[in-house]
Image 1: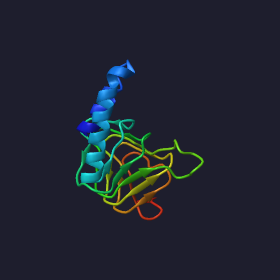
Image 2 (image 1 turned 135 degrees about the horizontal axis):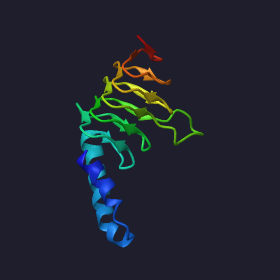
Image 3 (image 1 turned 180 degrees about the vertical axis):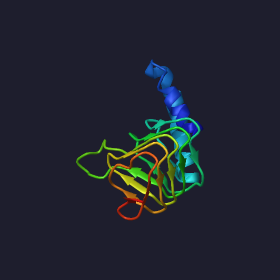
Image 4 (image 1 turned 90 degrees about the horizontal axis):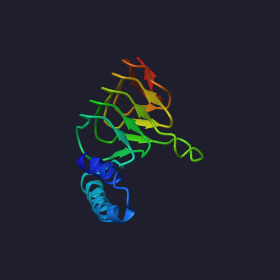
Length: 141
């Protein structure tokens, strides 16, 4: 999380010449985290406060995703795009979303506040707030 927030901070430095050393440092730290812990969390992700990644490895977050405050993400989770011709479509998670291990959220889906996504679920449509989705494809229970 600290490396992602550092990446966001460095983009606030307006002269590119002054930003360049921080960009090199960010890229080195990003690769170290990705290779050591298996977490891909680009600086372009809109990340809320107190987000928890409970376990490392296999966490891949699309660069245009949004993760709300106090959300929990476990190992093996993917937030990615669904179609090659729509590369900017990314999942939008609300606040206090609980994502189980191995879950996949693909495309422009919105997960409502307080929703839960079961382990290994594949979410391809919106989940209303406070609901639980499980299965492949995910269904609300």
